[in-house]
Image (cartoon, rainbow, N blue to C red):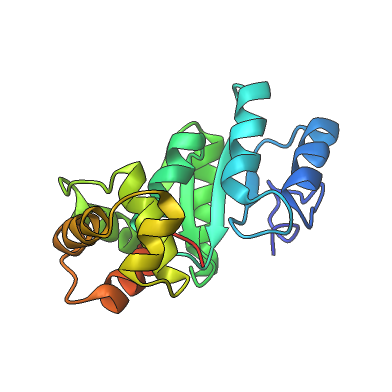
Length: 185
């Protein structure tokens, strides 16, 4: 599709984050399309590495992941655009041209997802640890033992997590966190 455009040419492909960095160094593309989930190094880490080394890198995330936290991580890492793989051909081509021209491009559905969660209080590092342990199937007692905290403290963290995520129960909290890209399982 890209090679069919008179002003575009595909110069390289990569199957992993590490390979993406290597290919970027070799080809220095005007615009890079980057997935988030790749073997080894993920897309966000690859974006950070490329942008740290090449300040003028222009990267568009092209993925199936819609979670607002993942989007923000990618944009903070240096991505100039974020599109879903389901985007129409014209939107992808327009995004490539916009980012090449120095503008940002985030699909409307992704922008809406971000807007829904603006102003929410983020989970603390400890709450993230607790939630990851819960997602792995641990009870509050097991979480407490693994993290070296009291069971009451684990319960208090869980109560805070439920409140911050507006979740009904532990399973709902894990589901919300995975969907938004707060945790990976």
